[in-house]
Amino acid sequence: MRDDVWEIIAVRCGRMSSTKGALYHRFSAYQEPDAPQDMDYFFYVLFSPAGRITLVDCGFSVEEVGHRPGRETVVTVAEALARLGVDPGTVTDLIVTHFHWDHIGNLDLFDGADIFVPGTELAFWESATSRQPQFVEHTSVAATQSLLDRHRRGELRVLGKNCHPLPGVATIEVGGHAPGQQILQVDTTAGPVVLASDAVHLYEELEQERPFGILVDLEQMYDAYSRLKRMQAQGALIVPGHDPDVRNRFPTVEGPSAGVAYRIARQAP
Image (cartoon, rainbow, N blue to C red; front, side, top):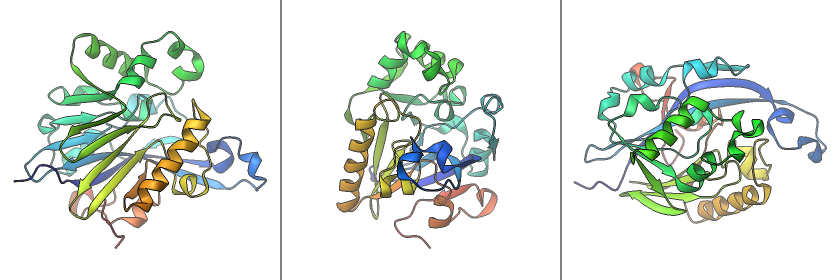
């Protein structure tokens, strides 16, 4: 049985209410009135026909979100997986796109999985610069330290700039939002799907090329938009990392996961 095509489920674990002015980098440059803008927090569960279960990121911890005003937990990662019928112990792989707090919050649930991390991201969070408050604000100190400790014990699989960590899954480093920010291209029966993670938070961000407010390299962020648009022109379906409209564009998984998990299909229902 082929192990290089995947079913992709987006899981909504949290939400926040904000404004465009608060979320976009220097929104005043567009000379537009401010407007509300919500965000959702997603992680992804990938199923292969051969029985492999891969997570792309692992959400945030309830304790961590409690320190983040305006954010709310919709469902814990453990509960979301239970609703999908997934035992965390059966997860074979965890691909971390970058080290921000809402992407690395439940590592201990997946001690049996192979954990893949971007090498550039790992090197940055090992550096003294990463301990500056402007960077610390966006990570979980405990979860980052856990990843660094695992690396020292030889327990992580470190990815280069362009890799194929699993059959039918390509990781591509684009930077911009985080030093080693990655996107993933995943092969499905209907063609390639690109999980943009935080290289693109919102559909509007990509469509209008409006950089998000959290960034380390503005030029890299614009370059990532150009790359994603080229991939889109070549037939890839782009899925942003935080847009609530994902819930409108894709069908929910029926049963216990309804309203929490969404099937990333090539066409909206």
